[in-house]
Image (cartoon, rainbow, N blue to C red; front, side, top):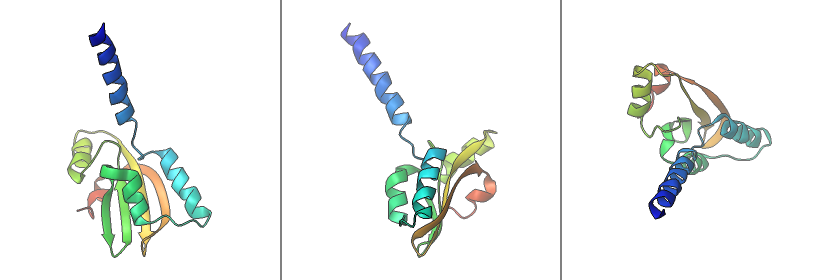
Length: 116
């Protein structure tokens, strides 16, 4: 009985971890609402909110960050694209360290060109 209960708890924990990604349309809408309201959303905020999924193409705070659910590297995204999967993610554009726009969009090979 204990093994069954532990197995169930482990499954619940794994599903909770998988569902923790902020690379979603809902997250993009939330950040865009903050920008529209005149609130500051900075590069550090994106790094904190997106965690390991935060991939950057920034020079002195100007550029963009990209995040795809379950992908912690450019190679992870490339592998999904190579496998023929449709890949969607959050793209936040920054100027001088502050977000100016955010979108949730289909990610393609060209989106990966500037990533490290």
